[in-house]
Image 1 (tube, one colour):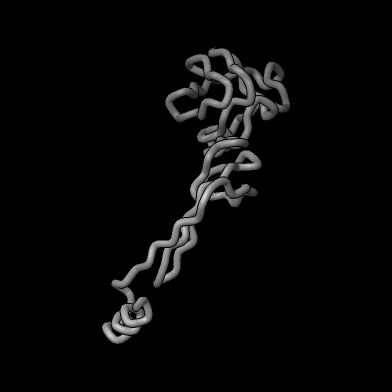
Image 2: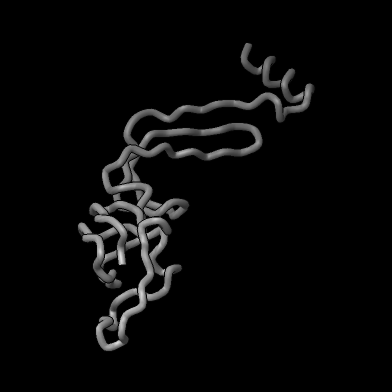
Length: 127
């Protein structure tokens, strides 16, 4: 059960959960009884304190919401390409997402990775 009221989409932490002993017949089959299944998840709706938490009450905690602005970065040893985009779906941290570009691309070259010969060739090619 919860020690405090959790707002919609708020991430549940270890400090938010209080474990109590209850007669098995009073516990719903969908009530979560494993701390690992609860900690780090987000509330799907407002959850009141003192109530058992059901599986349907939680969801993966999203780091990116649909419509959020995102930075798209592609990096190689010789360059970094960045662009701004808009997320087309919700996503957890580290998960791939669909997005749409909005704006210009920016190319950054890294001369630290080039040998002196390659830097000289690149300098001469700009003339």
